[in-house]
Length: 199
Image 1 (cartoon, one colour):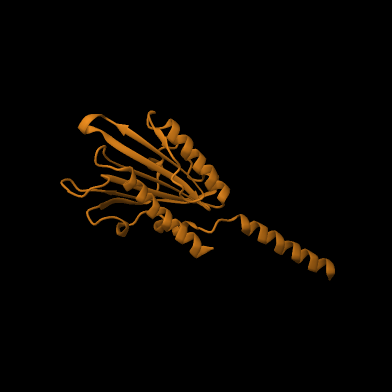
Image 2 (cartoon, one colour):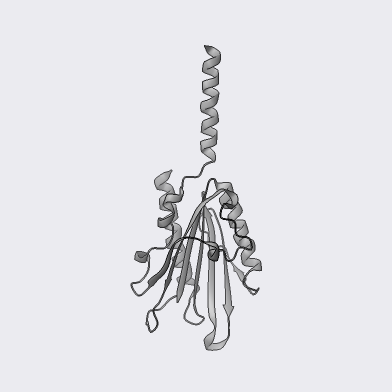
Protein backbone atom coordinates (compact mmCIF):
# COMPACT_ATOMS: atom_id res chain seq x y z
CA UNK A 1 0.00 0.00 0.00
CA UNK A 2 2.81 2.41 0.93
CA UNK A 3 4.60 1.56 -2.31
CA UNK A 4 1.43 2.30 -4.32
CA UNK A 5 1.01 5.63 -2.52
CA UNK A 6 4.66 6.51 -3.30
CA UNK A 7 4.17 5.73 -6.97
CA UNK A 8 1.06 7.90 -7.11
CA UNK A 9 2.91 10.79 -5.46
CA UNK A 10 5.81 10.44 -7.90
CA UNK A 11 3.38 10.51 -10.81
CA UNK A 12 1.73 13.66 -9.48
CA UNK A 13 5.11 15.37 -9.01
CA UNK A 14 6.20 14.35 -12.50
CA UNK A 15 2.94 15.69 -13.92
CA UNK A 16 3.41 19.00 -12.17
CA UNK A 17 6.94 19.30 -13.50
CA UNK A 18 5.78 18.70 -17.01
CA UNK A 19 3.01 21.24 -16.58
CA UNK A 20 5.50 23.88 -15.40
CA UNK A 21 7.32 23.65 -18.74
CA UNK A 22 4.18 24.48 -20.71
CA UNK A 23 3.48 28.11 -21.52
CA UNK A 24 0.36 30.01 -20.41
CA UNK A 25 -0.84 30.72 -23.97
CA UNK A 26 -2.46 28.26 -26.36
CA UNK A 27 -2.96 28.49 -30.10
CA UNK A 28 -6.60 29.55 -29.69
CA UNK A 29 -5.38 32.84 -28.15
CA UNK A 30 -3.55 33.87 -31.34
CA UNK A 31 -6.26 36.06 -32.98
CA UNK A 32 -6.13 38.36 -29.95
CA UNK A 33 -2.33 38.65 -29.86
CA UNK A 34 -1.98 40.86 -32.94
CA UNK A 35 -3.11 44.41 -33.58
CA UNK A 36 -6.87 44.70 -34.05
CA UNK A 37 -8.80 47.36 -36.01
CA UNK A 38 -9.79 48.98 -32.71
CA UNK A 39 -6.09 49.60 -31.97
CA UNK A 40 -5.67 51.81 -35.04
CA UNK A 41 -7.16 55.05 -36.36
CA UNK A 42 -10.32 54.46 -38.44
CA UNK A 43 -8.54 55.30 -41.71
CA UNK A 44 -6.71 51.97 -41.70
CA UNK A 45 -8.05 49.05 -43.72
CA UNK A 46 -7.26 45.47 -42.74
CA UNK A 47 -6.41 43.68 -45.99
CA UNK A 48 -5.06 40.38 -44.67
CA UNK A 49 -5.57 38.29 -41.55
CA UNK A 50 -5.49 34.67 -40.45
CA UNK A 51 -3.07 31.79 -40.03
CA UNK A 52 0.46 32.44 -41.15
CA UNK A 53 1.68 30.59 -44.23
CA UNK A 54 4.97 30.09 -46.03
CA UNK A 55 4.75 33.54 -47.58
CA UNK A 56 4.84 35.02 -44.08
CA UNK A 57 8.32 33.75 -43.21
CA UNK A 58 10.42 36.91 -43.60
CA UNK A 59 12.90 37.64 -42.12
CA UNK A 60 13.58 34.02 -41.20
CA UNK A 61 15.87 32.15 -43.54
CA UNK A 62 14.35 28.75 -42.81
CA UNK A 63 10.60 28.21 -42.63
CA UNK A 64 9.43 25.41 -40.36
CA UNK A 65 5.82 25.59 -39.18
CA UNK A 66 6.57 23.32 -36.20
CA UNK A 67 9.93 24.86 -35.26
CA UNK A 68 10.83 24.83 -31.59
CA UNK A 69 7.47 23.31 -30.61
CA UNK A 70 5.45 25.98 -32.40
CA UNK A 71 1.68 25.58 -31.95
CA UNK A 72 0.61 28.15 -34.53
CA UNK A 73 0.90 31.69 -35.80
CA UNK A 74 -1.45 34.54 -36.70
CA UNK A 75 -1.14 37.70 -38.82
CA UNK A 76 -3.00 40.94 -39.40
CA UNK A 77 -2.04 43.50 -42.04
CA UNK A 78 -3.34 47.04 -42.45
CA UNK A 79 -2.80 49.89 -44.91
CA UNK A 80 -3.86 53.45 -45.42
CA UNK A 81 -6.05 53.81 -48.51
CA UNK A 82 -4.69 55.83 -51.41
CA UNK A 83 -5.40 59.50 -50.88
CA UNK A 84 -5.75 59.24 -47.10
CA UNK A 85 -4.56 62.33 -45.23
CA UNK A 86 -3.90 60.40 -42.01
CA UNK A 87 -0.38 60.55 -40.57
CA UNK A 88 1.54 57.44 -39.63
CA UNK A 89 2.65 54.19 -41.25
CA UNK A 90 1.42 53.33 -44.74
CA UNK A 91 1.47 49.58 -44.02
CA UNK A 92 1.38 47.69 -40.71
CA UNK A 93 2.19 43.96 -40.48
CA UNK A 94 1.45 42.44 -37.07
CA UNK A 95 2.24 38.78 -36.27
CA UNK A 96 2.30 36.48 -33.28
CA UNK A 97 3.40 32.88 -32.70
CA UNK A 98 2.73 30.58 -29.76
CA UNK A 99 5.00 27.74 -28.63
CA UNK A 100 4.62 24.80 -26.29
CA UNK A 101 7.14 26.26 -23.87
CA UNK A 102 9.11 29.44 -23.22
CA UNK A 103 12.34 27.84 -24.44
CA UNK A 104 10.85 27.42 -27.89
CA UNK A 105 9.77 31.06 -27.97
CA UNK A 106 13.25 32.14 -26.88
CA UNK A 107 14.81 30.15 -29.74
CA UNK A 108 12.35 31.67 -32.18
CA UNK A 109 13.27 35.18 -31.06
CA UNK A 110 16.94 34.39 -31.61
CA UNK A 111 16.11 33.23 -35.13
CA UNK A 112 14.25 36.48 -35.71
CA UNK A 113 17.19 38.46 -34.34
CA UNK A 114 19.60 36.72 -36.70
CA UNK A 115 17.16 37.10 -39.59
CA UNK A 116 17.07 40.86 -39.10
CA UNK A 117 20.87 40.96 -39.29
CA UNK A 118 21.11 39.00 -42.53
CA UNK A 119 17.76 39.56 -44.24
CA UNK A 120 16.41 42.24 -46.54
CA UNK A 121 19.65 42.39 -48.54
CA UNK A 122 21.58 44.06 -45.74
CA UNK A 123 21.46 47.67 -44.62
CA UNK A 124 19.38 46.95 -41.51
CA UNK A 125 20.37 49.09 -38.52
CA UNK A 126 19.82 47.65 -35.05
CA UNK A 127 18.14 50.05 -32.63
CA UNK A 128 18.19 50.27 -28.85
CA UNK A 129 16.11 47.53 -27.26
CA UNK A 130 12.47 48.63 -27.06
CA UNK A 131 12.04 46.75 -23.74
CA UNK A 132 8.99 44.79 -24.79
CA UNK A 133 8.05 41.53 -23.07
CA UNK A 134 10.85 39.40 -21.60
CA UNK A 135 13.35 40.05 -24.40
CA UNK A 136 13.21 42.18 -27.53
CA UNK A 137 15.02 43.59 -30.54
CA UNK A 138 14.32 46.52 -32.85
CA UNK A 139 15.76 47.55 -36.19
CA UNK A 140 15.20 49.96 -39.04
CA UNK A 141 15.86 50.04 -42.76
CA UNK A 142 15.50 52.65 -45.49
CA UNK A 143 14.99 51.64 -49.10
CA UNK A 144 15.09 54.04 -52.04
CA UNK A 145 16.15 57.65 -51.84
CA UNK A 146 14.79 61.17 -51.84
CA UNK A 147 11.02 61.56 -51.85
CA UNK A 148 10.66 57.92 -52.91
CA UNK A 149 12.46 56.59 -49.82
CA UNK A 150 10.54 54.11 -47.68
CA UNK A 151 11.42 53.68 -44.02
CA UNK A 152 10.82 50.34 -42.24
CA UNK A 153 10.76 49.70 -38.50
CA UNK A 154 10.93 46.16 -37.14
CA UNK A 155 10.11 45.03 -33.60
CA UNK A 156 10.45 41.45 -32.37
CA UNK A 157 9.95 40.27 -28.82
CA UNK A 158 9.15 37.30 -26.60
CA UNK A 159 6.70 37.20 -23.75
CA UNK A 160 6.43 33.85 -21.96
CA UNK A 161 5.74 31.24 -24.67
CA UNK A 162 4.80 33.72 -27.41
CA UNK A 163 6.81 35.75 -29.89
CA UNK A 164 5.65 38.78 -31.82
CA UNK A 165 6.97 40.48 -34.92
CA UNK A 166 5.74 43.90 -36.01
CA UNK A 167 6.77 45.69 -39.21
CA UNK A 168 5.63 49.18 -40.12
CA UNK A 169 6.67 51.17 -43.15
CA UNK A 170 5.93 54.50 -44.73
CA UNK A 171 7.41 57.50 -46.44
CA UNK A 172 10.72 58.25 -44.77
CA UNK A 173 9.89 61.80 -43.72
CA UNK A 174 6.35 60.98 -42.58
CA UNK A 175 7.01 57.88 -40.49
CA UNK A 176 8.35 58.53 -37.01
CA UNK A 177 10.07 55.95 -34.80
CA UNK A 178 7.77 56.94 -31.94
CA UNK A 179 4.68 56.05 -34.01
CA UNK A 180 6.07 52.60 -34.74
CA UNK A 181 7.12 52.07 -31.12
CA UNK A 182 3.66 53.03 -29.87
CA UNK A 183 2.06 50.34 -32.05
CA UNK A 184 4.52 47.74 -30.75
CA UNK A 185 3.57 48.76 -27.22
CA UNK A 186 -0.13 48.25 -27.97
CA UNK A 187 0.47 44.74 -29.31
CA UNK A 188 2.78 43.92 -26.39
CA UNK A 189 0.06 45.00 -23.96
CA UNK A 190 -2.41 42.67 -25.70
CA UNK A 191 -0.05 39.72 -25.24
CA UNK A 192 0.70 40.63 -21.62
CA UNK A 193 -3.03 40.82 -20.83
CA UNK A 194 -3.66 37.41 -22.43
CA UNK A 195 -0.82 35.86 -20.41
CA UNK A 196 -2.10 37.36 -17.18
CA UNK A 197 -5.59 36.05 -17.92
CA UNK A 198 -4.30 32.51 -18.50
CA UNK A 199 -1.74 32.36 -15.70
